[in-house]
Length: 141
Image (cartoon, rainbow, N blue to C red):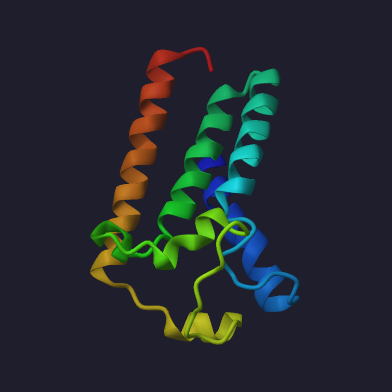
């Protein structure tokens, strides 16, 4: 459950605050920025450890990172980092997006592509391996 929650946090922060109430510039900004993600993840890990829920903290962290990485455009793998500047927002300007900033526009434009399926499968596979290894190393968590 913590993996699922962690994977959705960036979008649950950014999308409503950008598309519903225009407080953020885009649906990939504050929650997707590593400058916010790292302190949030560290805080969750510390809190989870204090409550003897270390595995849940690690699961949340894996989900959060996986959620962000699945939003990184495939062009990054070819060396084009211009569309991934949201990872260090506000240090770098956000990429511009072609779609209107609304839930309806994004839902109607969504396509399940091979790249989407690959990124999702890769993210889930990495998450499962990390959690399995953590569980093996710390069976009491």
